[in-house]
Amino acid sequence: MNRALRAVVCSVAVGTLALGLSSCSEAVDQVDKAVNETYEVTYEVTGKNIDSIDFHGGGGKAMEPKVESVSKPELPWKKTVTLRGIMPAAVIPVATDPEGSQVTCKIIHKGKVLEEQSAEGLVTAGGCTAESPVTE
Image (cartoon, rainbow, N blue to C red):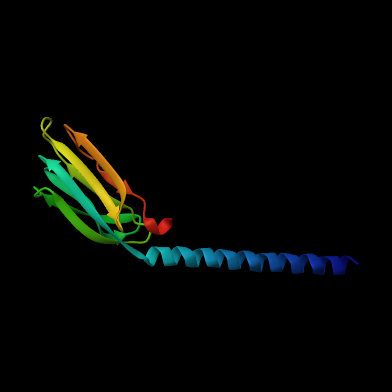
């Protein structure tokens, strides 16, 4: 009787483990697919007295995106980039003039504004950051 009970328990344990590994494998496949999927966003920056604009341009790794920069941009500024997987979209206008600076940034995906921010005065490290639409 003990031997039969052990066999049943072992069979259930092996079956559960196989099912768990199968589910885990499916989750890994979904993450791999999401990481390789691309999406396009358009960054828009308007205002005055903007010294530079930093943005995720699509290079680098999903969680360590390469930051590109434009010095003394002509405003309004607009740039469309292709990002990958879970990489967040981010645009950061920098203005160092404590008076007279105005800035609005937007991140747009498929015609929908994902993020929009506005500020006046000394603006550094504000900007817009949006979660990847691939994760939705």
